[in-house]
Amino acid sequence: MLSLYTIFAVPVLFILLSNLFDIFGYHFTLIRRTTTMPEKEIIKAYRINQIMFDLLLFIAAGLIFGWIPALSGITLKIFGVQDILYYLFLQKPVPEHWHWLRWTPFGFIKKILTKTQVIIQALFGVIISIVMLILFSHV
Image (tube, rainbow, N blue to C red):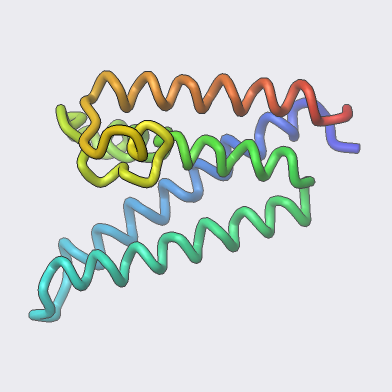
């Protein structure tokens, strides 16, 4: 059995590791690139790497700590929490319009999200993640 501390730490660590990969990966892939390949193609290749990293992180967390804490971490990712943290950690202004979050729940409904919609969506993700941990993790 995992302690309550560990159960809540797993999703936080998941989102922090995913964010760290995004910060370094995006920076080295796009900003410090040495190729003349079009940016759109580089972004596609980077996104594949990012998805694979998150999938492996989910599987590793699930096998080590249990599937509910791992699912809670991926829920934070799916609801855009990691994307908000990306801007906060880099101390960049949070964009007013988010056209790249089409794969999130709100993004399926509305293709371009406002900053407010992204924040509301992230809060929903945090709430769902916490409720999932409380209801389904047996401590």
